[in-house]
Length: 173
Image 1 (cartoon, rainbow, N blue to C red):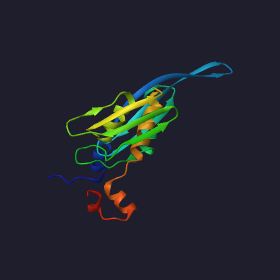
Image 2: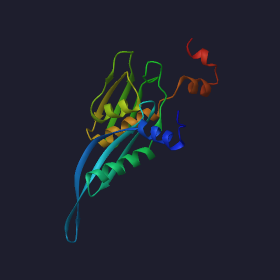
Image 3: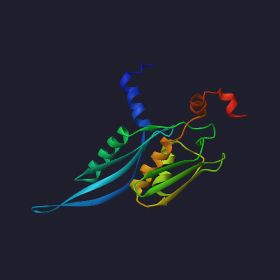
Image 4: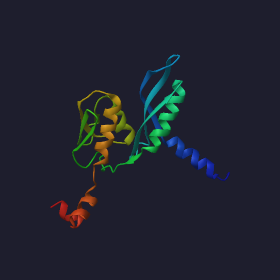
Protein backbone atom coordinates (compact mmCIF):
# COMPACT_ATOMS: atom_id res chain seq x y z
CA UNK A 1 0.00 0.00 0.00
CA UNK A 2 1.40 3.36 -1.03
CA UNK A 3 2.11 6.00 1.57
CA UNK A 4 -0.16 9.01 1.49
CA UNK A 5 1.66 12.22 0.83
CA UNK A 6 1.04 15.54 2.50
CA UNK A 7 -0.17 17.20 -0.71
CA UNK A 8 -2.75 14.41 -1.19
CA UNK A 9 -4.31 15.39 2.14
CA UNK A 10 -4.24 19.06 1.13
CA UNK A 11 -6.08 18.20 -2.09
CA UNK A 12 -8.73 16.34 -0.08
CA UNK A 13 -9.18 19.43 2.12
CA UNK A 14 -9.53 21.58 -0.99
CA UNK A 15 -12.17 19.23 -2.40
CA UNK A 16 -14.18 19.44 0.83
CA UNK A 17 -15.11 23.02 -0.06
CA UNK A 18 -18.15 23.55 -2.20
CA UNK A 19 -18.85 26.72 -4.09
CA UNK A 20 -22.11 27.95 -5.57
CA UNK A 21 -22.56 30.97 -7.75
CA UNK A 22 -25.57 33.03 -6.65
CA UNK A 23 -25.46 35.68 -9.33
CA UNK A 24 -23.41 36.80 -12.32
CA UNK A 25 -23.95 40.35 -13.51
CA UNK A 26 -22.48 42.20 -16.45
CA UNK A 27 -21.40 45.60 -15.18
CA UNK A 28 -19.94 48.53 -17.08
CA UNK A 29 -17.68 51.42 -16.24
CA UNK A 30 -17.66 54.56 -18.34
CA UNK A 31 -14.12 55.54 -19.34
CA UNK A 32 -12.71 58.08 -21.79
CA UNK A 33 -12.89 55.70 -24.77
CA UNK A 34 -16.44 54.48 -24.03
CA UNK A 35 -17.79 51.74 -21.79
CA UNK A 36 -15.58 49.06 -20.26
CA UNK A 37 -17.55 45.85 -19.61
CA UNK A 38 -16.72 43.43 -16.81
CA UNK A 39 -18.48 40.71 -14.81
CA UNK A 40 -19.38 40.54 -11.13
CA UNK A 41 -19.90 37.13 -9.52
CA UNK A 42 -21.39 36.52 -6.08
CA UNK A 43 -20.17 33.17 -4.75
CA UNK A 44 -20.95 31.24 -1.55
CA UNK A 45 -18.20 28.91 -0.28
CA UNK A 46 -18.82 26.29 2.42
CA UNK A 47 -17.81 22.85 3.64
CA UNK A 48 -21.27 21.70 4.85
CA UNK A 49 -19.96 21.20 8.37
CA UNK A 50 -20.16 24.62 9.99
CA UNK A 51 -18.02 26.92 7.84
CA UNK A 52 -19.38 29.33 5.22
CA UNK A 53 -18.38 32.57 3.49
CA UNK A 54 -19.76 34.94 0.86
CA UNK A 55 -17.40 36.44 -1.71
CA UNK A 56 -17.63 38.87 -4.61
CA UNK A 57 -15.30 38.87 -7.59
CA UNK A 58 -15.00 41.18 -10.60
CA UNK A 59 -13.09 40.43 -13.78
CA UNK A 60 -13.20 40.83 -17.54
CA UNK A 61 -14.49 37.30 -17.98
CA UNK A 62 -16.96 35.15 -16.03
CA UNK A 63 -14.48 32.41 -15.06
CA UNK A 64 -12.03 34.96 -13.64
CA UNK A 65 -14.81 36.68 -11.69
CA UNK A 66 -15.95 33.36 -10.17
CA UNK A 67 -12.35 32.45 -9.27
CA UNK A 68 -11.89 35.81 -7.51
CA UNK A 69 -15.26 35.39 -5.76
CA UNK A 70 -14.21 31.98 -4.39
CA UNK A 71 -10.92 33.44 -3.12
CA UNK A 72 -12.80 36.31 -1.46
CA UNK A 73 -15.34 33.90 0.05
CA UNK A 74 -12.55 31.84 1.66
CA UNK A 75 -11.18 35.03 3.24
CA UNK A 76 -14.62 35.84 4.72
CA UNK A 77 -15.22 32.41 6.33
CA UNK A 78 -17.17 32.18 9.58
CA UNK A 79 -17.63 29.15 11.82
CA UNK A 80 -21.00 28.20 13.30
CA UNK A 81 -21.95 25.63 15.90
CA UNK A 82 -24.73 23.23 14.93
CA UNK A 83 -27.00 21.22 17.23
CA UNK A 84 -27.39 17.44 17.04
CA UNK A 85 -30.41 18.01 14.78
CA UNK A 86 -28.20 20.03 12.38
CA UNK A 87 -30.03 23.20 13.31
CA UNK A 88 -29.17 26.39 15.19
CA UNK A 89 -29.54 26.90 18.94
CA UNK A 90 -31.80 29.97 18.95
CA UNK A 91 -33.55 32.59 16.80
CA UNK A 92 -31.10 34.90 15.04
CA UNK A 93 -31.52 38.13 13.11
CA UNK A 94 -29.08 39.65 10.65
CA UNK A 95 -28.96 42.75 8.50
CA UNK A 96 -26.89 44.00 5.60
CA UNK A 97 -27.87 47.16 3.75
CA UNK A 98 -31.65 47.10 3.32
CA UNK A 99 -31.88 43.32 3.72
CA UNK A 100 -33.02 41.70 6.96
CA UNK A 101 -33.01 37.94 7.61
CA UNK A 102 -34.62 35.99 10.46
CA UNK A 103 -33.42 32.44 11.18
CA UNK A 104 -35.40 30.09 13.44
CA UNK A 105 -34.38 26.60 14.58
CA UNK A 106 -36.58 23.74 13.36
CA UNK A 107 -37.34 20.17 14.41
CA UNK A 108 -35.52 17.26 12.75
CA UNK A 109 -37.04 16.37 9.38
CA UNK A 110 -38.15 19.92 8.59
CA UNK A 111 -35.45 20.64 6.02
CA UNK A 112 -34.19 24.01 4.88
CA UNK A 113 -37.16 26.31 4.43
CA UNK A 114 -35.61 29.45 2.99
CA UNK A 115 -35.48 31.27 -0.30
CA UNK A 116 -32.87 32.55 -2.71
CA UNK A 117 -29.40 33.41 -1.50
CA UNK A 118 -30.21 32.62 2.15
CA UNK A 119 -31.01 29.00 1.23
CA UNK A 120 -27.65 28.61 -0.52
CA UNK A 121 -25.75 30.05 2.47
CA UNK A 122 -27.55 27.75 4.93
CA UNK A 123 -27.09 24.61 2.81
CA UNK A 124 -23.36 25.22 2.36
CA UNK A 125 -23.03 25.94 6.10
CA UNK A 126 -24.36 22.43 6.77
CA UNK A 127 -27.66 23.46 8.38
CA UNK A 128 -30.29 20.78 7.64
CA UNK A 129 -33.34 21.92 9.68
CA UNK A 130 -34.13 25.62 9.75
CA UNK A 131 -36.79 28.20 8.98
CA UNK A 132 -35.66 31.48 7.41
CA UNK A 133 -37.40 34.62 6.21
CA UNK A 134 -36.02 37.45 4.09
CA UNK A 135 -37.43 40.89 4.87
CA UNK A 136 -36.83 44.18 3.09
CA UNK A 137 -34.53 44.02 0.09
CA UNK A 138 -34.42 41.12 -2.37
CA UNK A 139 -30.84 41.89 -3.41
CA UNK A 140 -29.00 38.52 -3.41
CA UNK A 141 -25.68 39.94 -2.17
CA UNK A 142 -27.23 41.78 0.79
CA UNK A 143 -29.45 38.79 1.66
CA UNK A 144 -26.47 36.43 1.64
CA UNK A 145 -24.45 38.81 3.81
CA UNK A 146 -27.43 39.26 6.17
CA UNK A 147 -27.67 35.46 6.53
CA UNK A 148 -23.96 35.27 7.40
CA UNK A 149 -24.46 38.15 9.87
CA UNK A 150 -27.30 36.23 11.53
CA UNK A 151 -25.22 33.03 11.71
CA UNK A 152 -22.36 34.97 13.34
CA UNK A 153 -24.60 36.06 16.24
CA UNK A 154 -25.50 32.47 17.21
CA UNK A 155 -24.06 31.34 20.54
CA UNK A 156 -23.79 27.80 21.87
CA UNK A 157 -25.24 26.65 25.20
CA UNK A 158 -21.76 26.36 26.70
CA UNK A 159 -20.90 29.97 25.70
CA UNK A 160 -24.11 31.26 27.33
CA UNK A 161 -23.45 29.25 30.51
CA UNK A 162 -19.89 30.59 30.68
CA UNK A 163 -21.06 34.21 30.20
CA UNK A 164 -23.68 33.84 32.94
CA UNK A 165 -21.22 32.09 35.25
CA UNK A 166 -23.44 29.05 35.84
CA UNK A 167 -22.85 25.36 35.13
CA UNK A 168 -24.19 24.04 31.82
CA UNK A 169 -26.71 21.76 33.62
CA UNK A 170 -28.48 24.79 35.17
CA UNK A 171 -29.46 26.12 31.74
CA UNK A 172 -31.81 23.18 31.22
CA UNK A 173 -33.65 23.49 34.54
